[in-house]
Length: 585
Image (cartoon, rainbow, N blue to C red; front, side):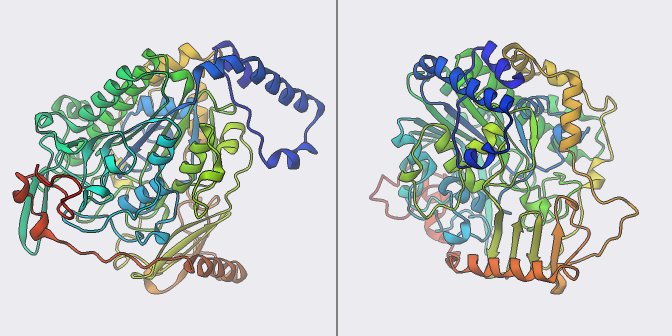
């Protein structure tokens, strides 16, 4: 009764979810376990009036951009303290097998639509300034929630196209928007600069709904987005459920010459890191951590926390090296952003909510970014029958709430018909065919960034003293101890093969097909293709089946002459079909 009594006494009420697994598990349950379930049913009925009064759960979905696997404390790093993120993860569920796409635009397309990007023609690279590509028409997560009576807000990055006004957030289901249309900008002045055919194009890229927000220039991006989120919460009518997505610019790079920016007083906290670029990256992560703590505090102050679901993910792994690198670390994983190795697609992720009966655990069940649409839709009481029948996402809510087995058995990590690069996670197996680029990012890059460790080592007291840690102790009848933090962290920290273990190297850039047992070999060091040819054949057949639903990639067409910011008072602006909404900035 530990989890149930913990929420009962704190005044929170879990939601009982009956799933297809119930019958399958019934034969395995003892008399005491059945009594526990019956108690839960009675408990939920007892608190029915409370649930009715509270209404549909609020959803706050937070997306970090290009955050490295090893750049949060709960994955084992002592270099960059993330006490709020760690407190959220330890008091919720650490999703240690959460996968996104290898680029930001495809990940966002998958998140918003619940469909694999290859079924949208968006399996290629991210949309760049002045491009005509945009997310195809079709209902988005914001529109589903709006139809359910939710107030919908997007704060931060869009990066799903803006050549037409009809492609922009407030015409795709969001009541309000404050953020960027492009994938990056500077952190203070919100200028996005792009070189095309040897010529530089620069423009302001910060919108409040559809209007350039000139007055917000000079405010640090993470702070601005945090202030907006807190303001939304403070002014929110609690009789209306809230769906708010905070898609941070952090920790994506900005413009050449000032790749990463952070307040100097924050940078000064990381003097133990000798590399000045890594030091600034650490400060950007730290400000992101502060932001999540501030949003949690605002929800608590508004008395909304007891009926809120908070999800935190990164869209993909960090680009440790390369022309757009941000000095993030995916250690000990192989590969970086723009690869289908674990370092590119296995992302930082956790979920927190009082509605989670089985929390404070590490889940290794497969979950893909497409799953969030049906999962959250179920969580707020939606009928899955009204969703697009072609959705690829799988409802994982029962699995998350009760720690039941996941319904997901495989994940097509991508099929790119242009680069001929594909990968599939199939149960505990993973097959990779082909490579992105010329294979130069298929190695291990994160370790050198971890040389400068905070002399205080892992500070579990800071987790308890963080805003999220303090609130969690207040609302939990049986709060976690610092030993609990260490135990969960140990489980969530990935370990490569033992130094003495046999390794069969494999590089798909050479034409080889690589097969890995991911639970045993998360660092993808030991290729097993020649030992399990039948597994290779089966996974290849599955990839062929998925290939049948692929839509060829949209052509990358840059219309920079018409998109040139100087035509719109030096702001990046929609430039096609200007009759929708005025093209004037």
